[in-house]
Length: 122
Image (cartoon, rainbow, N blue to C red; front, side):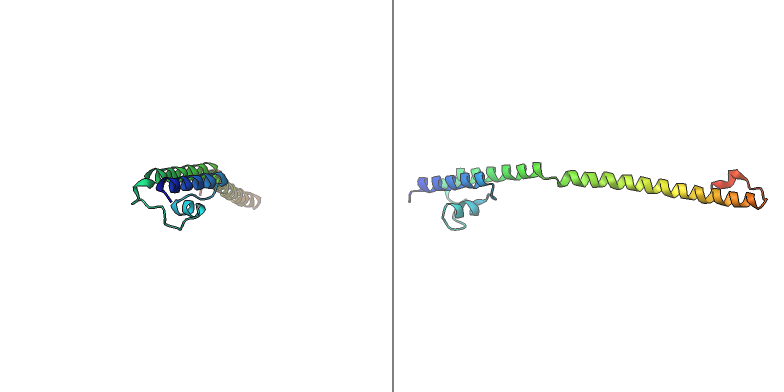
């Protein structure tokens, strides 16, 4: 088979892979074209444009997947929620501390002892 028709066969296979959204690499294109794995080699000068097209298609596929991947956005939401939770827990601990201090002050006052209210900042 002439090198030109073989390259055309690979180009058609590349287009089919792109249309189906399957992973694109040299071996996948070769298999789709009905050739053996590893038959697309950089050492063959006639395949330079084909290899460049495969690399470009793989890059575009990777970028499209990254654009639709919700993982980075979800990680950011998790970080924001974790920060809000930590702030809420700090507020709750501070309020509990104040509650315990006020209860102790109330207990002391109910016993008839006078407590310095400015001393609540223990």
